Image (tube, rainbow, N blue to C red; front, side, top):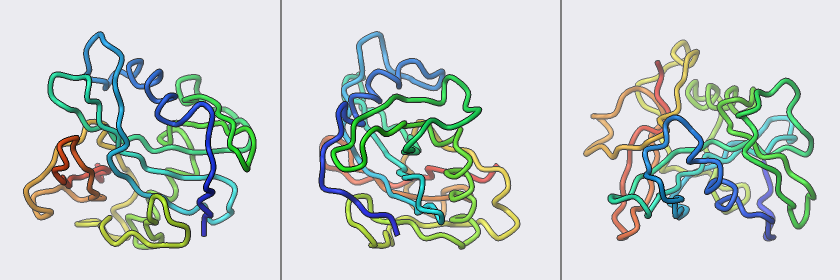
Length: 190
């Protein structure tokens, strides 16, 4: 199981995402830089223990209406070979582990393999901030062992009224700036 270190990262994940997010073609914010708040997410374990995997939900409060984004992150101790240029979100100094290369998880084979494993019931979502603690609020619905081949991350999140209304995939929650809880499909099986 992944160990969550009580330390700082410089620059922070939110600082890196504030710069990276507006450059993505799925970004729906305006001309102003985003103002990001961490709003939810979960972790997955790399079976080999080499890659940190975090599925982060951030809310941009600079937009006229808050917008929730899903960003799977991969933390590596060295650069990811053959990664496309847009995959690297940035580097950060971790207080315990040293330099971390932080990638958009959709470009990282370890992250995508673990998302598929979660969909097949072969991996367990972990709490975002507690080591060795499953997160029972993250659920898989409507996907079976054969359905986890083609997955898509919902980058701009939309809450659903009930999980039954969500497509097959991974459902997780986040919190809007006013404290309202929301749930929706963060990953869907295409």
